[in-house]
Each structure stands twice: as C-alpha cells, then as structure tokens.
Length: 182
Length: 182
Image 1: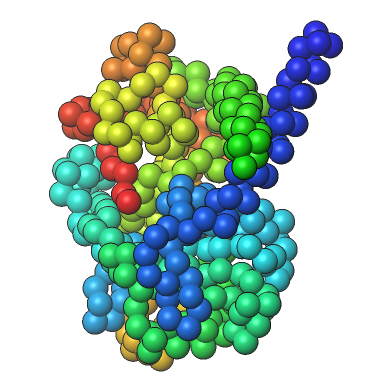
Image 2: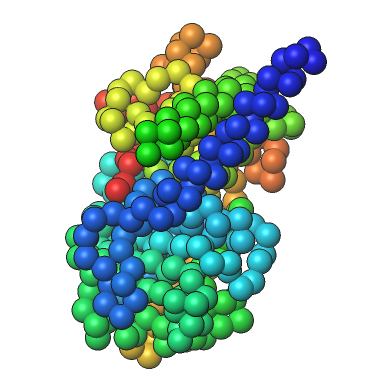
C-alpha cells in the first residue's frame, strides 16, 4: 500500500509539473489568424474546451435573439471560484454568441407532459469575444485587451473602440460582466 | 534542443500516464450523497468543471423560464466531437437548469447603443440531471442510467420513470437531445 501510495504521489507530482509545462505552452500558443486592432489579441488555441462560467440570453434589438456562453481559461476560472479581484495576468474570458432558434423536435417531446412549453436552441455561431488580462500591456484599458471575431476574422478598429467603454460600468468587478454560476 | 525535446516528451508522456490514472480515479469516484432511484446514479465528482456541449432556453409551461447548459465528461466530449454513436461506456452528460431572470445592470449598459435590448441571466440553480452510459448495467434503458437532483437530493421513483421514455424520440442520436455546438 505504501509503495502504491508513493507511486501515485510521484505520478501525480510529475503530472503537476507537466501540467504547468503544457499550460504555459498553451497560454503562449495562439491560433494562426489575424489579431484584433488596438489590442493585438488573436484567437486563443483550444478556448472552446475551457470551463463554463455562465450562460445568458439576449433579445438584441435589431440583431435578433441570441444564446450566449462565457468560458474561462484555468487562470480565469480559478479567480472566479476564489472571488479574486482584480483578475490576475494571464486570465482570459471567451464569450461565444449564437443565434437562438425554436426547436420543433424538443417542443414535440415537451408539449405532451408540459403543454405550451417552448424550447429554444442554438442556431449558428454569430461571433466570439475575448478579454485578455495583461496589466502592463493593456495598462491604458485597466489591464484588459479585447477582441471580437466573426468567422475567425477580427472586427474593425471602430468596433474595438467600443469594448472598453462598454465594460466600465462593471468596474467594481474588474470590468467583467459575467458571474460564475455553480 | 534534442535534449529539451526529449525532456518535454518524457514529461508529456508521464503527464499522459498520470492523466489516465487521475481520470480513472475521477470516473470511479463519486460524490457523497444519495443515488437516484431505479438507476443508482450519484452526482459525479467535479462535473461542473466538464466541458460545454451546448446551451438552451426553455419557456417551461407552469414552471417559469429557464437557461440550461449541457456539460460532458472527457469520454462524452470526445464522442460528441467525433460524432461517435452510440456513445461509449463511461460517457456522462450533465444538464444544469437555472432560472432565467432579467438583468437590469446589463440592460442599462446595452440600452444606450442598442435601445430596446433585453438581457437575461441566470437567477438560481433549479436542478441538475445526468445520463450515464453503461451498456451492461442499463441494458433495459438502451445503456443509459438517469438521475435528477435538486439541491443535491435525487427526485423520486415516479420522476425517474419518466426519464427514458422522454428520451426515446432522440433514439437516432443514441437518446441524447443535446448537440455539440462549436
């Protein structure tokens, strides 16, 4: 038993070291593609596999109905869970926006036990936004760099000029609107 | 360079081995607490950290408005991404259901550039459901075991008798309604 325990500890310890190596490589590695204007943020590799922060829904005047999810890299999730403010350097938050469409399939099933129930699911991807914390690089915008991509292409300079002012009302939460939901 | 490459490979290989060990421990380890009737499914440890499959919204007749997210363990996510059907044994899907509430804070911010925009966010947790694939143990229900927990407590037998029949319309997708969204 002792030997097994030691082996497991050794393996887990090595996994921890390896985890740090792999993590650093991931944090440094960014996908190919264009960077956002002003901030120079590229789409972070593997962001779709990050953990879920929260979901929300938007009746977006003039732009239709949206379902949205916010994901965070390990540094961001750790900070959310611990309530750490401001977010530490290296934290990245991704916000994926999709169109919302009615699900006829779901409605057929749900309407039998729950008449009148309406299910809405994801239609297609609209865009994805990122907030990257780097207190030195982005000192002029409270440490956050922003990016908004549609089909892998960043929006223009005018669009990105709206990012930071829009986040100012969330100043007391380090400019982050999303709250981690258990 | 060669030496660094070897070291990295060794570390990554060990991380892989450790990953398997940790993964098996996680898959086997379940939280304390009661198991669902009929199926004997307990709340899987660490499920809130699983990757996101999709999100949806429900106008739940007589039960209010809900925002929902489906998460999958590594086996489930791998199968979703590869389009593997039926899902392999060990796959677990979690469906978290929250109440949906208007966000006055978000609306104040969004209404300026986009008048009439309405933001809805999560209010509180309603329940969480699990589907666990074990083709032998749950042979009578197409290989799936079900569970529905509210505040950590499983629903009753009558509730759990509704799980499988409700999923039959999704038979061609191995009884899973959720679709993985990029």
